[in-house]
Amino acid sequence: MEPLTIETARAAQAKPLFGMLSEELRAVAAFLGLAKYRAAQLADALYKQRVNSLDEITTLPVEVRERLTAEGYTVGLPQIAQSTRSIDGTERYLMRMDDGETVETVWMPNGDGGERGDGSEAAAEEEAEESVAVTREIQIPVANDNQDGYKRATICISSQVGCAVNCQFCLTATLGMKRNLTAGEIAGQVAAVLNRQRVRIGSGRGVETPSRINLVFMGMGEPFLNYDAFIQAMHVLRAMGIPESRMTVSTSGIEPAIRRFANEPIRPKLALSLNASNDAVRQRIMPVTRKWNIAALLDALHSIPLGKREYVTFEYVLLGGVNDQPQHAREVLALLAGMKAKVNLIVWNPGPGIDFREPAPADVAVFHRMLIDGGIPTFTRKPRGRDIYAACGQLKRTVDTPAALVEIATS
Ligand code: SAH
Ligand code: SF4
Image 1 (spheres, rainbow, N blue to C red):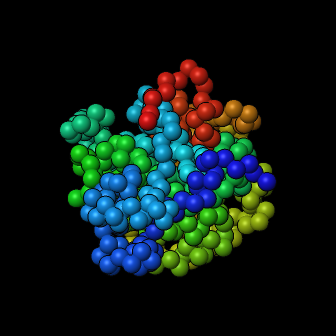
Image 2: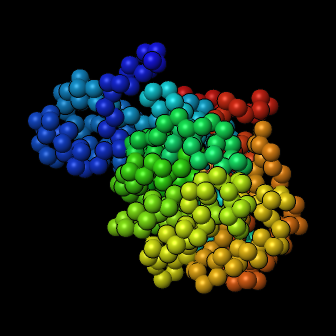
């Protein structure tokens, strides 16, 4: 049995409100004998004002706040325990949950290019900005208090503590699977980062309205193995003012969950981590392929209705000598023939104890060119925050960061 620490004891009693949708908040109000409009005030405080504690909910009378506290209710946002800043402006946060477990969340001012070419609002903006930057060398304007001068930012969030999928090239996999995050813990990472960056959305709290916020479920964990919490988190994030069209979920390929996802009335965009051009290579680097092979995954993807301008996004991590050769590019083209597909190439980010090598830059260029020539819109992701282990597949916990890196003190 696990020892009972103060943290686990507190977590056992705490009833976090953050993560509850209107119906659950109405049930809380009813349980406390409060008028119905109190539930709406709670939702506003949690999702628009993004309060950190019940004391801050000034729309509620003190007695009501005291009642909530006495019943064990808390706001329950994850706490930023540590933060590390990269030379490129990326910030990586270690987020501590109520029970002391930690995950990582990444703030990327100006994104990492992952949205390009997928027909979304975020993509259109990024492409427009990039062409302007190239042709006219216009600087992105610096808003008030916005030292990085970003116009939009992408937040990469985690869905589980660790991951059970065991992809051989991924650092998160080495943690194993510790537990699922709740919906409140998933969406709460975004609230904590937005508060930290003082981003205001709509009429909510914050000192500036710099930009567009895009979200990627690409941090630690496999969102489709924590499906219900992931979907609820998406609804909470919508309540925070971020539309689902600005969210992308990435999956390693959990076929039944892709089919469920296809039937969701409201869903973010989907990216499949293809990462290999045939089942033999994929099985080697992603053992989950033994359960659902590439053909089964592509078939499941076909069940998702696509908007007019929408593409199916495939992520492809280039591993030197393993999946980055011209014959692999030809196989990818054959696999995706006839699909409205877009490919994001990701140069593999090394991690301690992981036995792969980075692809040669010339091989990346040839691979990219071959896909483009084959008619597939292809983008090579900008590696963000590699120096602080904040890039894809490098998330493991800040405590493992080399000591030479500067840690920014946090509360
Ligand atoms: N579990 C989900 C989402 C998190 S991983 C998934 O696997 O899709 C997000 C992306 O990072 C995936 O496309 C994954 O293939 C990629 N990735 C994992 N480890 C990586 C590494 N070391 N270098 C580059 N990309 C990596
Ligand atoms: Fe899990 Fe994604 Fe890493 Fe695979 S790549 S181990 S699914 S987090």
